[in-house]
Length: 239
Figure 1 (cartoon, rainbow, N blue to C red):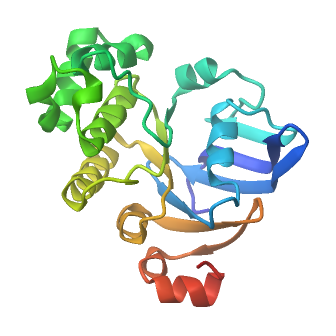
Figure 2: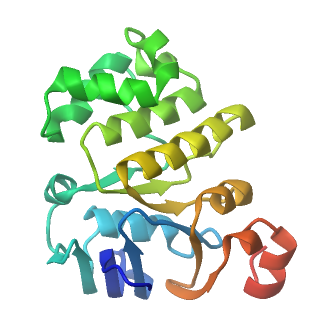
């Protein structure tokens, strides 16, 4: 894993829904400032993994450590306060609240003042300036995704867990999301664990790509392989 210690480390993680096991011993590590992608078929446990890391699903076995601390039994709020940010599939912004109010909700975890935090975030997401008084639900899907990212970043996380951020979004905003995340990663040293089906997005953002099959990480591939669906099919058995 290189020289620096892991910011997020997962060992032997098991989880599922009721009596239905989904994760069967996941092990992975993400270093500070590192971008790690996760690829896998639908139903292999990608969303379950992120939900378990965030505490929305209980781990039935194994351990999650963040910044050297065991967080396996902590609540989602406690994990967020520790520095784990999560943008779920479907974005889950507050559609009736304005863009500004959505960002203010994100500031509840911020150590800095609300105005200072929002000003800093809007500098990273300039597209949102024009929509501050507009309801979140009136934005396009891509703009809602930018808002979801911006709201999460208002809390000052050290790692972002992103679930399918480009799903249903037009290509121009996908490029904007990729560039914004790259810049934020560089400038703030934020780490990223990304679940994504868009091969160009996952290859363009990831330092490493992990393959999740049947509830376990089965191999690691370099990002250039992830860009080529034929190579993924050949070496990893994804279709």
